[in-house]
Length: 117
View (cartoon, rainbow, N blue to C red):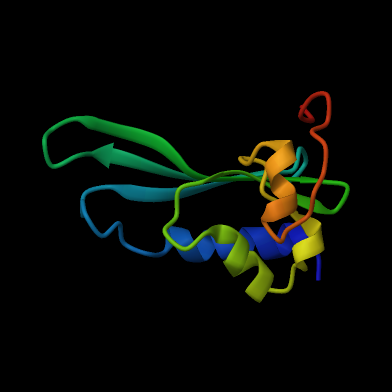
């Protein structure tokens, strides 16, 4: 199956879950398939009256390799992507330093010079 479709489905599933600690926050899926970026944003007003706006998940896809740039989930979105059909050797935990990736059980890859625009 296409990694873009899998990533969209997994992030959409996360977006459908209510934010447990602050019910007034929304989870918003943001997809840019032309550039290979998929985000889950959390936005709204916190219980203390502060504005909340942050990225919970950021996944990039380059050359059919899934790069998890940021993962703020409890279990880890990599496990969900793997269960959905993306093999471990096609998932890079990009938030880990390149020299530490060998210890993750996922793909080891060097950072490209720049993210696609």
